[in-house]
Length: 270
Image 1 (cartoon, helix red, strand yellow):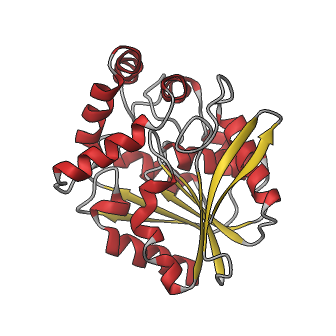
Image 2 (spheres, helix red, strand yellow):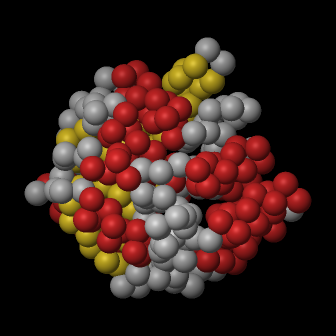
């Protein structure tokens, strides 16, 4: 079941709500440059196990509205809060991949974990995605700048190149085309705006505010969000558990989807 939630006077966010009668609710926040459809192989399985799965398309991506502004982590976290309130969600698991993981972390800090009983982070882009003074981890800023320039000059080529490093397991050409189409659903300006956000946003303090049990799943072959960032998250979040995925890159939810689903369900039921 899909519907729209108004988060600002002229901005609506698309929400996919599967198995609303499910016993426990998981809210999924997708990574850049996709949509809730990145979690297709979770949505195929988890509702069969009795879970309610809610996928949110961030503004600018998927089927959500694509305004010119509002791509900082504060506003994106506020969009999530609007959805949580509109759906009257309580005691739910907040799950975020990559940039979606960063937004989940900002939500926990900015909204004091409103409604969240557990947190799950999948290759989260935190505490920051790019290297900086006294922070030698993450991507070189030049890599992100190249992504931004590619967005404005040849976005399909940039997205195709990004797909080449997204997965660790071999994927078919049709699957690669599907991933490309997910990225092309976004607006060019929102694609670039999120990449610009990577250059300036930090989540060091946000991580330290998290009090709920937290699962961290991170592929050891991740070329987008290096595995070291998952280790830093583990050190910063008191009630956290890091599970390295030995045969995964940035897309553990696909590279090792069966193990991913089992570990997520095990964490929820603990």
